[in-house]
Length: 282
Image (tube, rainbow, N blue to C red; front, side, top):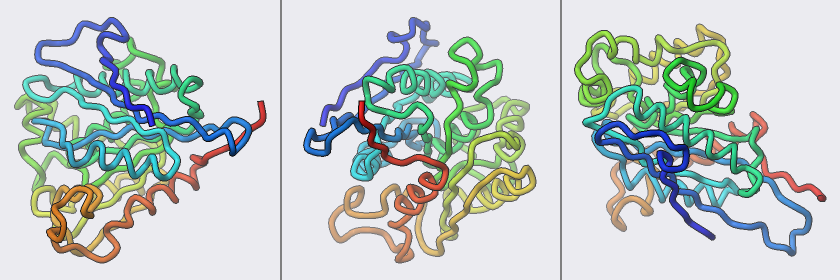
């Protein structure tokens, strides 16, 4: 497997705002010749959490490797956090989507099978990508159809800017601007033509209360968006893979038995949306 990193600002000639950096890592592997023909794979853009203060290592490579094992070409974006604010990180995700689709042939990716998933604050970023893909903030980067993911996966997302939520995430992304903070509440950005959504949370999440996902699910239902919602009983915030790939051996926090299956459930949902490995003869 070949792992490489791309500086998106250098690749596209955009001048980074002060404090901004956008590094996109890709795990690429060629299909063994014994299989025969040419194989195209779905891709997944992974947006780690970290309260828009940092990007979590636990929600980066360990998740990418699990998707690679399921046949995906995974990408992880280390996007800009404080001191930058909206729309810097959104623009960087748009650049990442452009890169994935522009390089799809070389990477054996079907450009119509590109998912984006995010964790916690990365889930919020993923949600803004899925709703603002044709907005003015990213219009100079690529057309909306290039930026728009084919399906979204939101993992314990920071979603609702009011009431019980994750204050630090919204303060960081809005820079303390109350009008901007109100605008970036995901349930207000939901639109009927956004991509299908896989959404999961845990009832015991004390850092990002599950009301974030509950309110978002209600908005998705009201707008007629195709989605599925998994609310697990036990589990703290930031579980990532919820196994020993991200926790010390024997020290996985208390979780419901089915929490580690979230990725398999997500992949099955993505398959229902058409994201599958395909073989063809050239």
